[in-house]
Length: 415
Image 1 (spheres, rainbow, N blue to C red):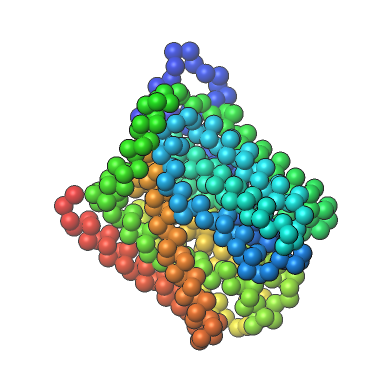
Image 2 (cartoon, one colour; image 1 turned 135 degrees about the horizontal axis):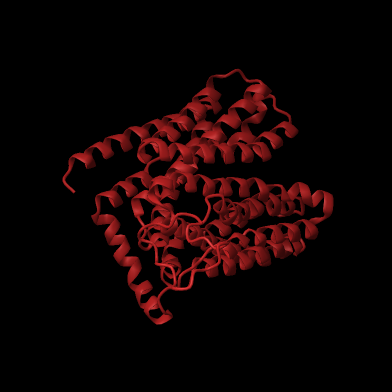
């Protein structure tokens, strides 16, 4: 039986079967978070690729992923329901059924401009459901993980995210072998199976629905105020607003690959499955790193590792081998950032209303990512690709310096 945190809900008078865990094993979170990463990759790579080949314009293909992503900007609005109603198991299972069915249906709908309306609706439904899958997992991590293990658990959770991205992106290659409906159906079944670990987790009863609804209605504003008022919350807001470890240059690796004379097959392998696997390893290492030093320090180290990889890619010779090494190093560092960021934020928010507070900060973190992504594209267009990589690295260095300065200032200020 796994160790129970001191502040966890007491066990019932009749002990549950020994197969049920109040504190889930860390590796469970790889499976629980995998559908979240797979959903976006499936829409962007598999559905986008198939739709593009069927005559859908580039703008409409990009719009499908934007529609899937849109709920992730506003997900903190419905996060209080996950905190105060039902159980994380119920939310995860129900949302995973909806998200998996939506993704599977996207593969069955005939691709082409005439089906864009249906594809957009399915992308929106799957996007909303995927936010709930993620929030249920994040809430479970925050409530059940002992503080000394936050890094390790965050590493496994983000390994699921990175592994899901790699898995979701393989749908295009699978569709070429088995056909689109079969590939989409297989993906949906695998993603549904990712909820199975929750059958081995014990969930003490929460408050009744009426009390939960009233609490959820009050929760959003009160938790926003608690973040604004507390020193740890203010530090969390600063962390999420900084361009540290954004990893935005990865979006351009396929586009800039001709400068390194990399073949299409090499680009597909290095930026696809190989990058997914190396990001999983980076996430697991980042989780261990977060438990071995102060978590803000671990996050700064990970962000600087992304910057170092960008600088190295800018300075290395333009050869196919250098392209592969640079891409893998950059994505390994991205994995470090995924885990250290998650562990840092989980440490800041504590256990109360975890889904609400985590997703307020996660939504804010989209702002610097979009800024750096735009900056990289602008610099590449106007000053070249070497300058783009340098700018990407400098943005991370600037973010690390600001975070270190703000942390120092907040530590000197009375609580």
